[in-house]
Picture 1 (tube, rainbow, N blue to C red):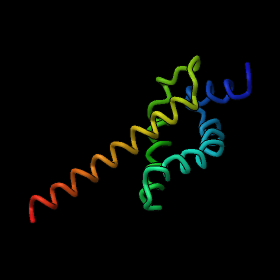
Picture 2 (picture 1 turned 180 degrees about the horizontal axis):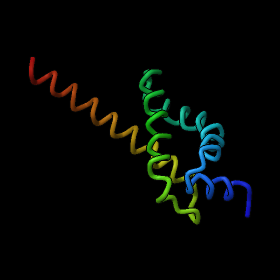
Picture 3 (picture 1 turned 180 degrees about the vertical axis):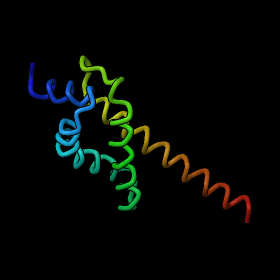
Picture 4 (picture 1 turned 60 degrees about the vertical axis):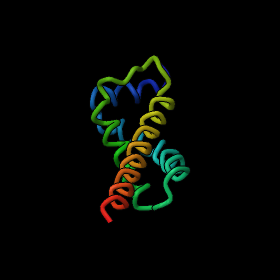
Length: 98
């Protein structure tokens, strides 16, 4: 079993050290990807935090036969789009109330 698969397998079982290794390896990539869509540093940090919280919460559903990179970036993309959609709804609401 490759090292990456071993770490992902341990992570799926709830191993906090494996999660830490995944976080260290991927957080900068998630941060950079998020910056492509969101300019506010504090919002970017919020999204990155949400990504890793969601990753931990859904670890049991992780399919070890599929690309982890793909899964992680789809998760990130979805959280970014949800946040952007929420921002647009708030802006629309503010425009209609005034």
